[in-house]
Length: 317
Image (cartoon, rainbow, N blue to C red; front, side):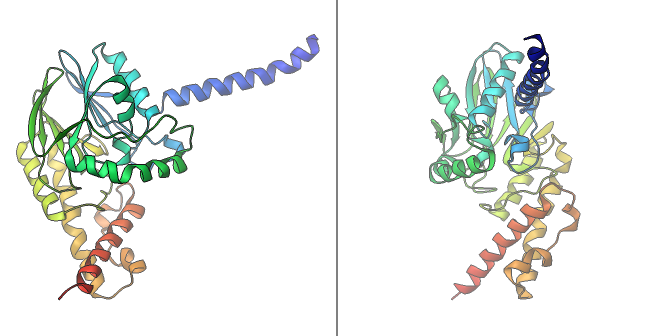
């Protein structure tokens, strides 16, 4: 009996150690919130595509703690992500979450909505973001289950916002005053940014990425560039992008520069009659080669703009 137990113990210890490591890894999936100012925190995620290695934690989330409650800026990729975030919030403050804001429809920012609905917490978004969630998020959810696995996405459901706005607004929530900044269709229809007046912290949502190539799939490039100029004139103390590191507003022209440069690069490739498959190679933007997702997202952006140009050409009178 003692011999059998002695033989079993190493295996048992290995199993227990493995389980403990898995638990630690799961607990560490969401980075610790960084405090940016009194009552202002941000969870800065990996600037990557959702994958098992990052648990789908690829979208930044803001946490605003006021005198009477907590406001979340975006809700993450899954129910699991949001529950882990709420556990971190409880370590910061005992105050309840009183509101969440979906800045845009991206799957990395809206799939914690269901957990909040079950808690009775309202989720606010622009009406166009709500329409995008209704039209697209079932497909997005299926894609995330394929990418991350059923266990990672367990309990995640498509949940639309419960409070809608149609334009810019100023609200008070949890004891903080927030300006909801809307400039029309920019990075996507319905995209908003959130300015916390007390700290001067701007949460850029889908309108702002930094050190990561932005997604132009639903973008109006002209209005987006105009919106970035308006955000710069606000002169916030700091900017928390939807993806990428917290940065000084002086860097906003870097993002605007990508938006300004990509269209003429694609137009030149189109006029050279290169094929769609060759377009990305024909329209490089080397100044942004070091930004995350350059190889994949820049290619997608070039191909999307190429197809728009081709469609306009084919349908011209």
